[in-house]
Image (cartoon, rainbow, N blue to C red; front, side):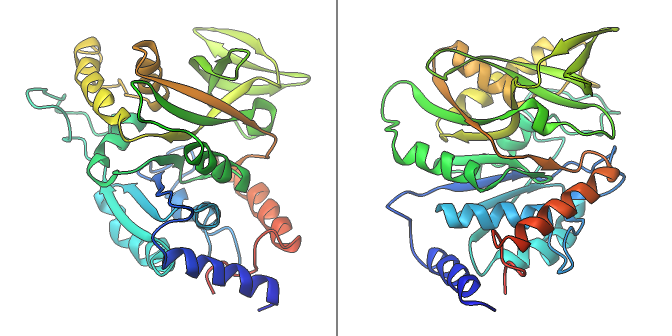
Length: 326
């Protein structure tokens, strides 16, 4: 192990054994309950390096370097053993680890779910399933997305520099350029962000079935396709949130069931929708930090090769050590 890599490891060990970095306590919340139907398996724990590391390893590594001191994995019960025996055991020496479980029956009292419903209630529901483990400012990410180190530094520094003692909670998100989030292997869904001159989020609209088309992208709405500029800022579920937002989300989750009472076999409570509701009620605002970082993800199995090659290049350029946790 070279001197540069040893220094990196030593710093990680130091963070794990100190209470905070600059008196800031931050939790990384990772959405890892999805089973990857389009991918064809548990993409959260599909190795992308010769050492058997997953995308999620690199996210945790970057989070620790930024100053995060706890990670909460939101998973399904059936993948707990495999998850803990792989990624969990690898990172436990370097960061506090907790597990939350997204269960379909974790819903408000008095609400009845359809008997044939097998899929959980979406990304906002997943975060609410971890509510008991989230006591400090936190960052939410997807397990199968590579965000780049800058995203973790941005969100850590946002809360380091913002006082959330007022009536409005100052949250944030990292926005990506649409062109850098697309795949040639199929369509994707992205949250289109509408931002004012002060880089505050005014609205976010989920666009489904987005695909590249020459000099622009296009998305489907109904049966029609609409143009979407490549430089559009989109959400990749990279949020920085205060735990104070969770009470409002819990209340809105009850409303969600009422509003979707005729569509409860398919309806999902998405995190962008939940956050937007808090903005509308003037309970929080969202600062959007744009990044030029390249996003890598594995929506489809054929996306894996691109991710593997990208990570290999980052390791070759010594952005990451050849073995993250040794």
